[in-house]
Image: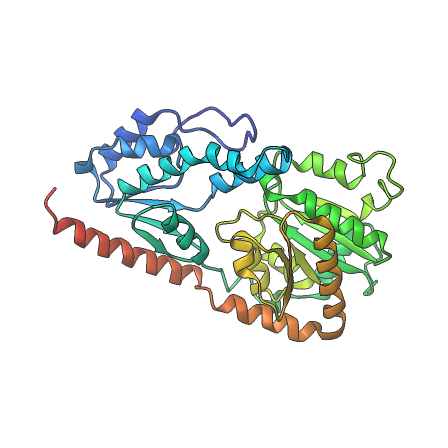
Amino acid sequence: MIRVSGPASPYDPSYHLLLNTRKIRDLVARERPDVLEIHSPYMAAVGALRADPKTYGIRTFQWHSDFIDTYGGVLEDKLPRIPSPLVRTVTRPLWSLVRSIARRCDATLVASAWQVGKLTSHGVPNVVHRPFGIERDVFRPDARSFEARRELLALAGRDAADERTAVIVGVGRFAIEKRWDVVIDAFLRVRARGRDAVLVLFGDGPERERMKARARGEHEAGSPNAGAFADDVVLPGFSKDRAGLARSLASADALVHGCPFETFGLSIAEAMSCGLPAVVPDDGGAAEMHDPASGEQYPAGDAAACADALDRLLDRVATDGEAMRASAARAASRLPSVREQFEEQVALYAELLARRTSEPR
């Protein structure tokens, strides 16, 4: 791993900007990689595209963040008076940028089938479907334990022995596009209807404090339920303990997800691999993860519909929970393991390298 210094992102200081494109070019020339893979359409791409083709074997583009949909969706959500055609006009140059990068690469890799169709429809060439893999030895149904469930309840100050309280979890980065506002609002609606439940959201990011404030009802002053269930929403932070996270997922009752812009939805896949039923939006990679036998869907961005879906799911779990857990695990088993993903991707690289070496430069 070679680190290149760069300024922190203004929105999220945990991200840094690769502004020194000359440094990237020089590093490629020094290391002479077989595969030069672009993972960002911004300055990192500029640096990789500046590299002399003689200094690497093939160049690929990994599309794992749909920044165009994210920007357009946030614009439409925060500025609803802006008509959709205008949003498409604003984002059209971004698709030109993506096509420009992809045309100069040997392949563009995407993790979900719907992204294959989407990128192809926008004229992006050489799109290849390679789903992400799951660490099955970590995220597995038998990670479930009563101890882990009691720990989740204790995070919300609940009686650790209370089996009647529904334990709902979410996992992801606290950024504006992840739509944790929808998740929190939906949960508060479910609580206001009288269902006993706690919501534990694992992760960190620039929106974390705002989401805490939202749980306290500070975004809707005067609401009769403002802050009434704030103690039932817990944000324990980012977890580096993947085995511990797997135990929490396997021991909860449901996962709820809000982001309609996922290019895959790895946190959903890992939760389902633990046997956890899931509520997901009907758009993006999250929708592709949906398994009707173990989950519920709702119109993306609709907190009231999300609350209804969560209520339906918890009712189903109460009567048919074990069968739903088994179905979730079966659905996740159709995805590759991490090793299988790695081997498939390396095989693709080998194929592209063989094709490239047989062509005149």
